[in-house]
Length: 321
Image (cartoon, rainbow, N blue to C red; front, side):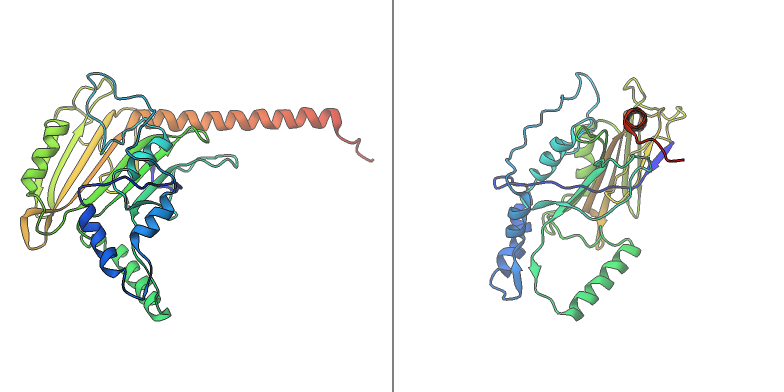
């Protein structure tokens, strides 16, 4: 089994995209636009970062095969090209921008070539003019939040963030896995059972479903022939997807498509959903793509070295003895 953390990337954006939480996400920017400390509003930052992106997205990647299980998260699915995935993610909301924070990735020898192993997406935020003391305090708070894993619980309602894992030769990268977390607007959040029902309506009955104080956990998994994994299968506990954008990706040649979802409750009402985490991966396809990429990079490097040796044999200066 192969395991990867998450990666880095870059991308662009739009003027016409919108999502269901648009009004809620815009409100802080609109309200703070008169604040002299605001150097740039979230909307202004997003517009600049997204550039010439056109929405709605029009993916060129091949659609899902007929009769295959549903395998997308808001339109992003394994096998989609890197550029298509960026467009679909950013077009899901006009305030989403690509997150270039450095992350891990698959530990393979790229022989100096740059592979886009994935990209994140987050909501743009107002850029505030801060004092050095405020900057230091913010850095400490962010570090503490990461160490205590509070980021999901503290997400602003109406926002979302993504991570999409990709692999392939330069400019030919394809989606292996995708994860998204969405925080619901207070006062408009659905019930946990309602979110679970919506998930089952889209993806079908889950292979496994569990409820506890931390939330509801649902998993779907398929074998290499797209047949649902059952409780008697050895893959029942071995095939899953990364539901959180911060999670690593497991790849096995024995697992097919897998989806995992976690519905987290509000702190003061366990019946109401606060966040939905959901991830998808096709483990075997991702494993094959990773192996093929490694082999192609190694072959290209061997060919380069052979060509360099041939040129040196023909053109090199005679050594002085």
